[in-house]
Image (cartoon, rainbow, N blue to C red; front, top):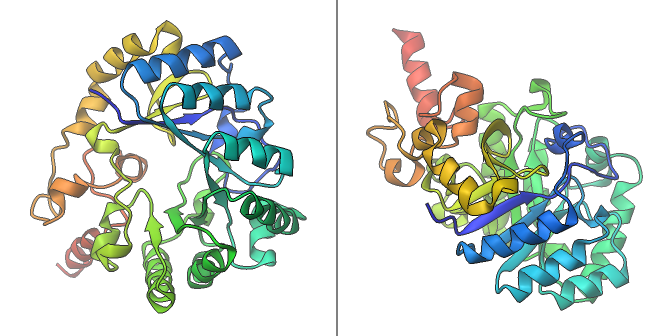
Length: 333
């Protein structure tokens, strides 16, 4: 197994308390030390990893972040950072520009009221102010919208907002019931469908690129040209690492398959032998997946959602419209 990219939850610490935060469960994790983080970066490069995605928590709280970014760049890897952008300043922006960092900026509403209902009072004005700093320093960025019951009806306006803000693309991801996110705020299948169709209509209207993360079956709902292919977890192209250095089956599943403190190469070997990992990479597809034209691409869809809802890693993704059709047929029999 040779992962091309690593998603690194560098810390669970954050300056906000968002109602849907999946990373809150890492707040008590024993984080890698500075030297261990530097060692990990070197070993990632030596193993052929081309890209490091840093997330949290809020990565900008790490006082040694520039040290890590410099190492990542010096080893020839590219890097992006997921941030709430509320603690951005001009000095920090200049540093990011120097190290060619791409940003993913969280926006969870098309307006102040919705965004602050999720992310807290005062976050909207800080975000808008700091996006101006990001743009003035010519840092490329996309926005990220976690689709939930609290905001699914605003995806169309969100896409238009992202375009007005100068984002490269408007990204969206269905919320998962993990961390602080209760099942009460997880969108239903019909709500997710409405969210995607509204976003597609807006993107088509203004000629703008939107991207859907972690939901391959979106291609069965909206025009494929708007759907990101960034969902390669079942193909071993992306690897998740938590703040303590654990290799995780998925960053929303607390299933550990190795730890980098023993060395990344050794941890990767352990990961490759893990039974759950093997199951993810080689799912036993049943209907409706077995006869689906997307089966070689989708491979059963999001195994984390499948595991959470059906207690299996083989799929199907509970949000898939083909699953809905099967369930409706069963109800009529």
